[in-house]
Length: 383
Image 1 (cartoon, rainbow, N blue to C red):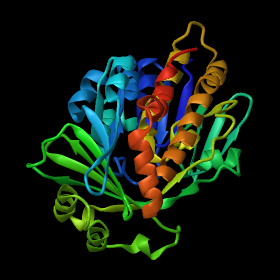
Image 2: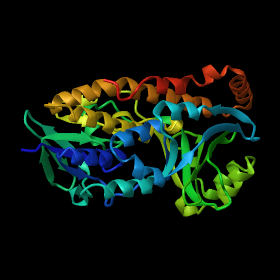
Image 3: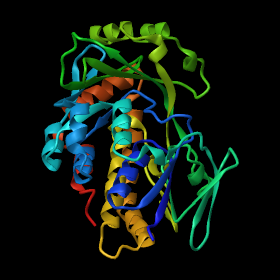
Image 4: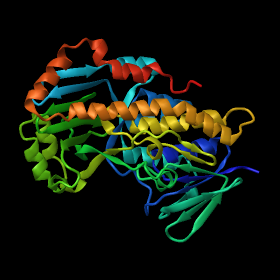
């Protein structure tokens, strides 16, 4: 009799996992809290490590046309002078794949197309779960329940399942707000992602396919600050002294498309496997977006679990434990390094900005590249 997996959450992690389980002939059901399944957000990066994971899962060839290949990543000051450039070529060579930027909605649509959509159940917000020696039961806020052999929590940073297991593992605020949106700009022709650091905040521009630009802006603010009520005109005023491309992009933005969120993560937790329950993606290791690795880690998670489940005479509980051992160190590194990178990038005191920029421009490249090197040093598929 085939084992049945209950998947809580139909985000990138949950949908990618469903495809992997389908390929392995496991039964699965997906339960999504929202009324519909769609990619909420704007753009994000699929770095070479994520593309390698998609390659192992047999999806890379179909994902590539959805993304815009990125040749470079550059950080500038608000006067458009280079602070540093990331050695993305090293990342490409390490995984023998390219780096891409992709629209979240496009990836969601693609992943849904690869699975049995009848297995997705919407408006199913998790209230709590129960597990016994032989099964797991999910209880939903609408009064219904579902029973299976295993439960995969891919229900995001606010995971009800993680909170039931680890009451102290609540989201923590990174100290800044993020606005983001996608605009169409047929005049923008670039294969470079640019992030601008300045006293009025941080602003990123990344090209997507179909003449689109994904932009994001981060400004320091208390969690309950009035800045969370900023209109698009307020954002334009905030960055009025930045580059012409930034001002032009904001001018082309539809105010109805701007998404405002606090930047959050979860302090690293010590375990992702709890007998028949497993945490993956943001439910396990939500990170700030500063290293562009949030979605990448989710796809890596699925790839590693898939690898464990393909082993001969697989004991699924043992596969969960092995997944746990293989993912803790790497994901903890990403959370900690990304949070630190955000603190450095979000400096808004002009004197400290000057010191930071001088240091970044003059320190040896080997030191500046060390976070990227540490990301590459460990093969995420090693056992």
